[in-house]
Amino acid sequence: MLKKETEKLFSKDKIPRNSKCWREKMTKHIFVTGGVVSSLGKGLTSASIGLLLESRGLSIRMQKLDPYINVDPGTMSPYQHGEVYVLDDGSETDLDLGHYERFTSSPLSRDSNWTTGQIYQRVIEKERRGGYLGQTVQVIPHITNEIKSCISRLSAPNVDVVITEIGGTVGDIESLPFLEAIRQFSLDVGKENCLYIHLTLVPFLKAARELKTKPTQHSVGQLRQIGIQPDIVVCRTEQRLSKDDCDKIALFCNVPSNCVIEELDADFSIYEVPLALVEHKLDDLITKRLNLTQAGQLDLTCWQDFLQRLRHPDIEVTIAVVGKYAKHKDAYKSIYEALVHGGIENHTSVRILRIESETVDREETQLLLKKADGILLPGGFGERGVEGKIEAVQIARENNIPFFGICLGMQCAVIEYARNVLGMKEANSTEFDRNTEFPVICLMDEQRSIVDMGGTMRLGAQPTTLAKESRAAKAYGMLDIEERHRHRYEFNYQYRDEFINAGMTFSGTSPDGKLVEIIELDNHPWFLAVQYHPEFKSQPTRPHPLFRSFVKAAAQHRVQNVFDKKNFGD
Image 1: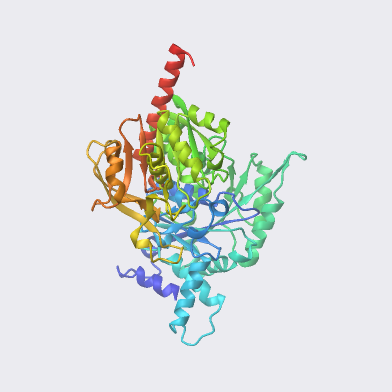
Image 2: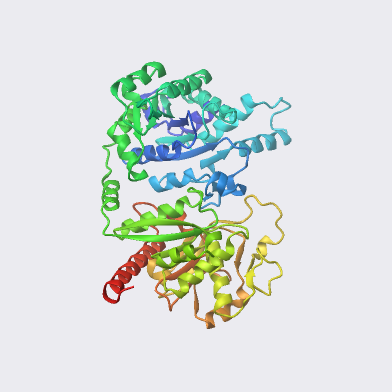
């Protein structure tokens, strides 16, 4: 079935099926699997491969297939899953899609992230409609056919390569249907159009002072038992592989020695990974194996320039990120990366101080916040730690420390201002106190009748109109923008006049003026908060305007503090 669909897709130009022109026009597929242990960095490796292929003039699409049964990560705790990455179309997706967007220009959509839950949901819906004509619905062929259909959705005459990352680890029972599907896929579209890359760990035993290749051998062995022979083995390692190590892996994994690629732990930055892969000519291996004759010469000039600026900053600033999930390094992954991007644009190194919002009431934490060059409050859900966030806002506001609030961070800024400037001591959000006397943050009207939690928030790209001469408008350089949202609560518009009269500016609203998207304080060096998530649209070579402006303000704050201490003492 898949072969017929593919032939129909590529037959518009009446090209003979077996001709050389057909083979060149056919979309190629790269499948990235992982073994030995989880968290090896398949997403980062996949994104790096995408960057290399784009840098050779190829058109790519990227995709993540996740084995968990949740329909999407939207209802999963950041402590378990890390951040939920939101796309323009409102899809709540895996955080690896953030790597895809930061490293490549591949357009991402709902078709870019599929879970076991989504696959089974689609199959069951078809069965309920009688779509299988009385057949017994089974994992093979029905589930695997659905997976293959999701992969083929990204194929198109104008797409040279689709890179599909398979979540989980080889050997996990949850991953088996996906691995079987990609095994079958090469039979459907032709082995010459598919390439399998397996990422494994080569651990270094300090006691023996040697690298161990056996885990990689076993991992590839498991993959081969399923019926997949990797074409390239990428080895994560903290020590360089010797020629003997590479030859041993090649011999027991049944690949040429030059197809064993060393991926050393990045000492300085994850953005160095693509250059490490180029060093081992991974892009050449891929283009030759897939017969990508249209690929041009590799051009990483912009990426190398960005890395050069990253390595040689003029100043370092400390940004305190006060969050509910600060213990989990991936819970605010896009925010941390966006801060780095904003720093590069300002020739500034950003040192991130992760602070749990529940600890803000401690004297030592407050001292750290007062010494920070900037304070950022990210998003989150639930009452835990909110009072600490509100206190952090007050510290930033009263001590003239550059402040940036995002989503819940903006809501906390509104609550703090209501309590400490407008005198509404019991002000709160109805998310935390349904009976609050001053509900300055409340549930959106369209959310009041919603019962299901998954995929029901205000999601995806929404338009915002900026006020002329506002700090936001100056940062963006335009008055009409689109940003990605993920929230149920908003500023209560009935309190609009009280806030304006007390000095707060609503510098960004929905086009109809009914939803407040950005707040600012004019009597503060840099105080700005947004209801949306700007971190999702920041890239290393194109930092988000607000992060760029925020880090610049933090650098100015640091310079001023150094000047004051030098001339006036502590």
